Length: 243
Image 1 (spheres, rainbow, N blue to C red):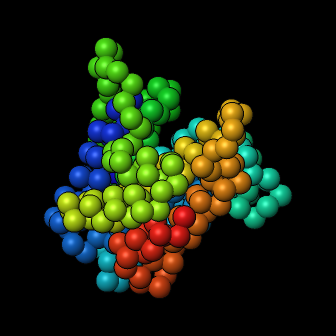
Image 2: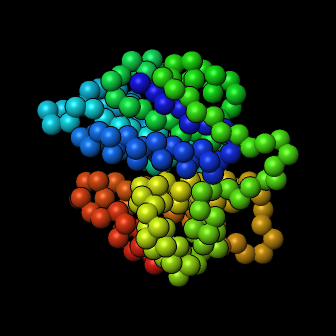
């Protein structure tokens, strides 16, 4: 079954999605949870998400984080990484092709898609069990993008000390490491867009190549945390001090 979170209010949409996930995991502790970025979407991943859990896990809870983002194609399609990050939105097409299977699944499939185009929103909402829309009022000033502005700004200006401090503060305030990782990876992709979309006057903290490397390193960090059973919170602190 699909649960869609979307709308122009990026901050509220992301916050509400992670609140829903936290409540679901508390209500059903045996849920196996995974957060997947758009770069990780493949045919086999989507098929696994639609299947039922295994012997010891009855159901899965899978978050697709911003699968329809408008990231510019700045990677070479000939590279291994580029195969999943480019080619005219293959990941987006795959997800749309699997909507019926995901909707029919017993697993909880959360699609977190701030600023989702209206046509796509209607298509997914029609197949979702619940669709939650959070929009800014028409007169609202343009917000700082993100849930934790201090965190994403520290990454944007490439301040390892500030980033480490904001991660520690957020963890102490009770923010889930998965949520912080999702926000940092979203900002890394945003930096890729900014670097590719306009020519900077003078130097910028992140070049296009560096922003791409940053995004890939965050994906690797999350994958290592899953495969090697590492503490994601500690991994994020080490990451902050390495930028």
